Length: 320
Length: 153
Image 1 (cartoon, each protein chain N blue to C red):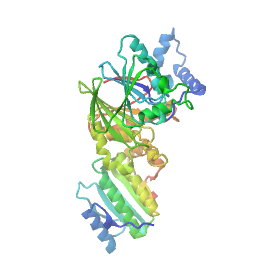
Image 2: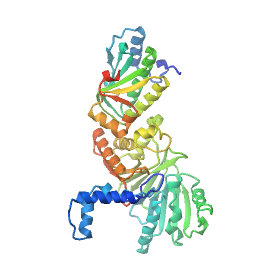
Image 3: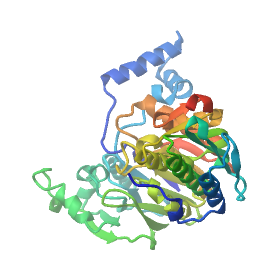
Image 4: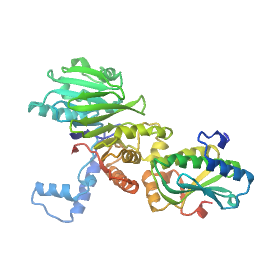
């Protein structure tokens, strides 16, 4: 199973501005300390090997879109955030090389940041494409059509050429799609959201659980999430806020924290956690700091097997 | 103001009732620990009646297995503060190994109860691990954290 992160930001797409790029370049030059590079490849190797990720790269700013490649032909994609545009272009390249033109989407929910990439999803114009949209929300088709009404977008949904199917999915039910067994779970979020558990034929499991608030007064119900995350090879988790923010000013905003995610993964004996749905006001250094703190918290509270805590970024590819 | 009543607690706890009886009989000497729980001795509760604060002492760890007991004893502590007319609850962390998000969230629940009763909560004497956890969670922004119980009073 291969996981490709096409969009990892929460709520709103962001991009590093000129000032942020200048600061990265300045830090890289200072860190180089007079080193000379014979060519771009040498300089690139320095950037990749010697610089902190937050200086030499970026976590990116596209909103939620994650590809779950079960190796069975069809595309499987979680959410349609702005990262979907980049996925769509890459998918066209792969289809040109012979990849089947079937796309299975699993939608966590229908908030704008999770569907905003769909109007820019180029394969939707491919008459040979089959696009199956699995959603826990019965309004999925309405939501996609609505954002392409003329008041919001110049291209109406009915102009799209692909063959569309909308498939309702209910919590607890299991379906087999593209070589993956998929199970959904209800989550706490405004208008509700759904997490998905994907298991391939080899038994490798990835969880997609974003826009899920683990509320203080629902702690006794968290055993359901622990069961859902149980023994997963990867849990992609909404870790948008600090715990303090999530229980104070940003309570009921529908998101969770890095340390709740780590606790749930510890209790579920999950192997790896991907911090996800990054706060749009965080710059790369803030996300890197949150990542380091998360690694430290995992070590401080670990009782059994280590949990590998990684930080998702746009362009990250994981082989499970 | 809603008055706290131990007897309304959905989870009867012999230790809690014992503490309450002792408190009501007014026989607790200043600063004397009442005892420890039979469920592994996770927590002690003690009072400092002369300094006008209720001190709840936790030791061991607060995690998935123990957060409900921790929550229950924080609730007890607030109830005792109400009974004693105290405006301060000190949570003594000196003997606590660490606390996961379950315990931290129980602290938030306690803070809400305490705020409603006009009682302030201070976290006292966290070890280095707990200091890190309070910083990582940003709970050091939500709670007053003091190096010692004395500083908390």
